[in-house]
Image (cartoon, rainbow, N blue to C red; front, top):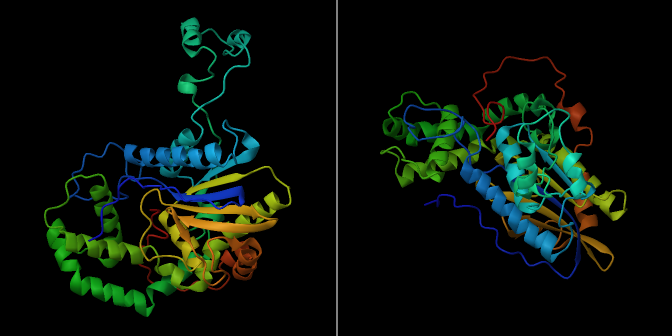
Length: 397
């Protein structure tokens, strides 16, 4: 059976003797509450639907501490305290991703700024009277904030314009057409038949619900996963076998769109073009940014992994993390790709854990759609075709 997700364990990946010169990280947000509320779910959720839970915050805080040990303490790539030109953080426009970013950065930069001198106690105050301000100043001492907290700027784009992290969603007009095409494919139809003949009746009986259609079942699977992760009470009729079938259904529901190559290209082109630009800027000393961190969703990771022919067909667990490390080995730049602490070997490009950056760049250059924004515009006449609800367009998981 599929094991319920523990806090993601980030075991040490031993780096080679090559100098590490840059990192790009893409993470799914941490554990959250379900996207939908169902009558059978009586779990004591303390947050609204789709919001990061305290467990999700802890996941990313631990990742931040681990990456601080690797990339600041051991590799000395990043300054121990925040230098804004070195680090860039971006998130999708949802609370759970923004809060995941905040939690990880608290682990990565646990020590915030101090005032430049004791004299600033009397300068760094609001332009109006504050009762008890002397007590606050005494408690802070030279710290700018309690607990030496370090604020981090997090860039956010409106989701409908976020080609970089949500290229598979409504940011791209063509995706609705590709979703319809996908739902008319033989594979999709086979899954619908498999669900209706082998899962639907058992699921409805277990949950005390009626008429759970295939498209709705993906949202039910999401709720079951959230309940199980947080160790809340599962519905009595949902045994290990039924739960596993629902997780397989979710694996498919979050990935079927990417079976259409044109959709996959539009979903990933903006990110991979940005990756190449970032690494080129490092190589040619056009930028001082050494660490870019993106907080997104499971389908973001699925699309990026499929584009590299490296997806294991399992939905990324909460806080899953994909790393692209740029190394300088004897004046030759190479890339190591790590997913949830396992090195990905790009067998179609190279045989080693460190791949030539030139080879990776050539591969991605031949793959991406450089005119992805233009390609995303739907130019033909729209014909009505029934579309099932979709995790791509109707919900970000």
